[in-house]
Length: 231
Image (tube, rainbow, N blue to C red; front, side, top):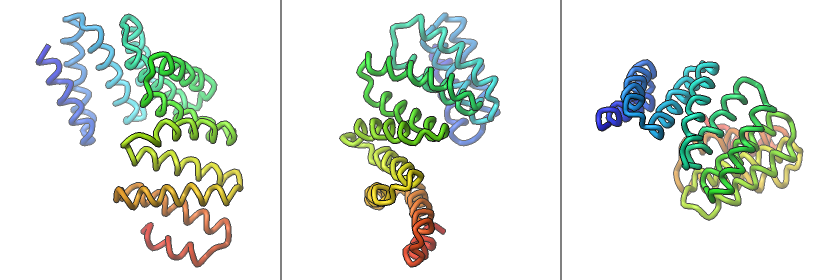
C-alpha cells in the first residue's frame, strides 16, 4: 500500500507541475495496486484524480468515465466528503460539455450531501460553482443568490483569497445586471483584500474587472489609472 500511495503522490506532483503524461503513468500504476488490495477508498480517490487529470487535458469523455467509476466506489463507503467532491467534479465536467441541466442536478446532489454532513467548505465551493453555472445560463438573479450563499460561508474563514473571489464574482454579476453602485461596492472590497494579502493573480483579475467597469460607465480617468496596474 505504501508503494501505491507513493506513486499517487508522485502523480500529483507531476500534475501540479504540468507533467500530465507522467502524472497519468503514476496514477494508473497506483490504481492497479489499490485494485489488487481492494482498497475501495483509495480506488475512488485515484479514479477521481485520473478524472481531474483528463479535465486538464480537456478529454471530457474520459474524465466523465473515471468520475462515474469513482462515484460507484465512493457510494460503497460512508464517506460523504469524498462523494460530495465527486458529485461536484461531475457537475464541472458536464458544465464543460455544455450539459447545464445535468450539471445542475449533480451540483444539487453535492449541496444536499454537504448540508447533511455539515461540510461547510465543500458547501461553499459547490455554491460558488452553482453560481457560475447560473451565470453561464444567463440567470443572473440565481447566480447572485448562490454567490452570496458561498460568500456568507466563506467570510468568517481564514481563506482570504476565496473570500475575495466570491466578492469579485458578485461584483461581476452586478455589472452584468447594470447595478453599478453595488458592483463597485463589491469590487472595492475585493481590491482591499487582494492588496492586503498581496495576491498578484487576484489583483490582475480585479484590475481587469475595474477596467471593464469604468469603460462601461465612461469613467476614463479611473480606467487609465487601473489600466497600467493590470499590465
